[in-house]
Length: 278
Image 1: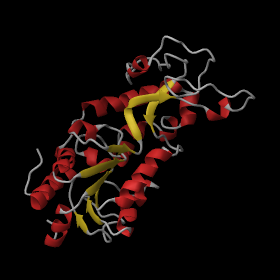
Image 2: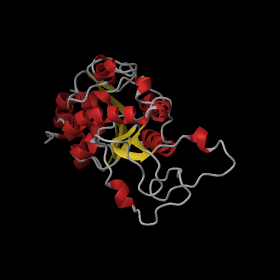
Image 3: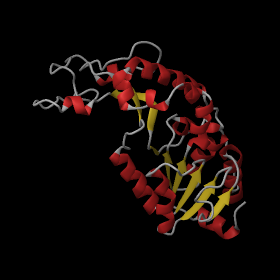
Image 4: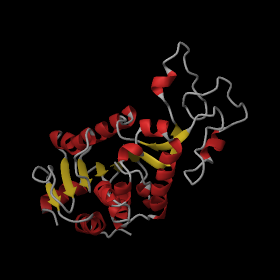
């Protein structure tokens, strides 16, 4: 599958980064961005459902759309590719998964260290309208429960973290923080929003200090995450691409394996470590 010298290098790796995109979850039945453009996304302009402005304008409409998306995500199960990524933890002392996906499938498969660059659809956080909050003279109050900017100065003293954790993304009215009353939204990165700086720094650090990086199912068209494989390459790390189509990385990678994650990754584990992912 890959050259013997590359297999030897993989077996000697102490820190392995696995960087995954939408193609990783497509085999679990979660459509990629382009597939959504033909199905779910074809019905609605993304700017109407996945931006802070859209939520401010019509929070219920945006909430209902994400509930619809969450229905598909909640039915999905980790595929053999996810299982193979989790099994890497048996052979490599340190495995860091960096994903652009919001579906929680890596954690469900058993991966322990997962950096979610674009958030997690099944988590909620407070919606913050920064322009409105900082338009006045008074400084906003930070809610001790949701870490958002409180609508009311007086917080409910009886509300606790467990009350917030009990609120889920499901059909119904848009929920509010039980302590401060702020509207809650899916904890995902919407169009026009920056990635979490701390999480991005962690991803950059992992890519720049790892011995090897496996890039799976990503088109490498979304910055700044697209730079991760190049950061590893520039530091001399082994970089292996797994993708059914060629990308800008294909010619530069140490090895480029054409195929989907569910079929290719178990074969990679078998060829390198003599094991099949379970």
